[in-house]
Image 1 (spheres, rainbow, N blue to C red):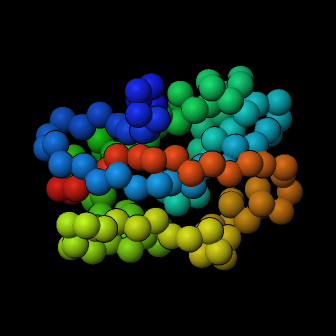
Image 2: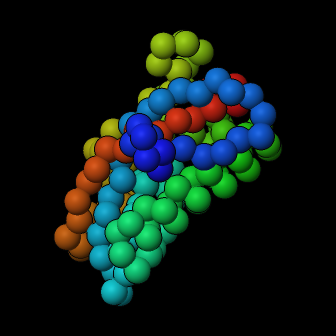
Amino acid sequence: MDEHHGIMGGKWTKGNRQIEVSLPLIIFEEEGNQVVFCPALDLSVAGIDEQDALNAFQTTLGEYLLYTTNKKTLMADLRAHGWTVKKSVRKPMIPPDMSYLLQNNDEFSRVFNTHEFRKVNQPVKIPAFA
């Protein structure tokens, strides 16, 4: 997480145009670990405490963005996860809403129905060129 702006983002090797979106993160405890789960990308990580899990999520998100941009599959992967991807410069990527995620993501539905959790909206920078 960028300590100055509260923006979580990954590192990319090419291009510099980025779009900022707000990702819902679900934070909960499971088997003694803190878990950060992003149902909009179906990514999750665990840590010994919340900060450790958030740091691990930042690394995982960076690796996801690096891999999908290098393979030129980011937009297709976002669409597969229910994102609206437009050619508009103003709002080119919109994450799916929580009701869509509850209906279409079994892991999120399991967490929602069986765990105490809190939801935070995390601003994230996503490459716009992918």
